[in-house]
Length: 285
Image (cartoon, rainbow, N blue to C red; front, side, top):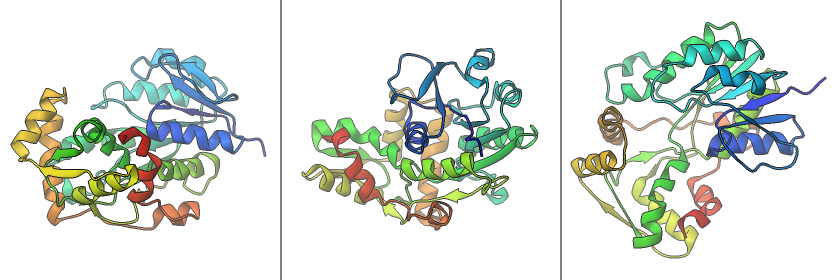
């Protein structure tokens, strides 16, 4: 059987980059959509294009069978045109969605703004006539890289909600599931909920980062108001700040589920946050 030709969007990010690396290691022809100069292994074709400009995608999509789609915006504006462009060339799209999508009971809860665009992207993709898979991961372990500068310079992380426990997922595990969806028919029409192997508090996450880098790192809890002000000062949109922190606070008493979908789909257990911290120790040193 001829191997599929795959275009990976978000190829310079953590998940997209891992998808590129895993496909390349398997010998699958892979293209990386980029907006500027980027380095990839020999044999990976980097092609210029921008999801914000659907007309720029034709060259990247030419001859492609499947697309791994990471949506980089906080609204679904322009998504219909991008999906139309994909549909002119490819037959399959694997979309990196969110665990927050699909639970009707959650609609009125904090955090709806975070998942609204994912919900719309899933709807557009399902209506497109393309073969599809929607991956719904819980929190990304790589989001803790936002603490890296503090860890390097102060040896402490100042953040809210020390007791917030989440089953954070390693980007390599999301990529491994994506590769299955891109290269086999096992996940056609599926919306797998993908989690890490255990609930782990933010305070524990910081301690494990300290273990990985070989020196103690403290967690210094701050109030939600201070955290919101820091997020706004860092340039996060007000609507995102207003959604994220209440949604996280809600998870203390109503944590996300933990499941074995990564192992069921890939045949390998989901990587722990301890493993993730070791893999990324250099980022925190």
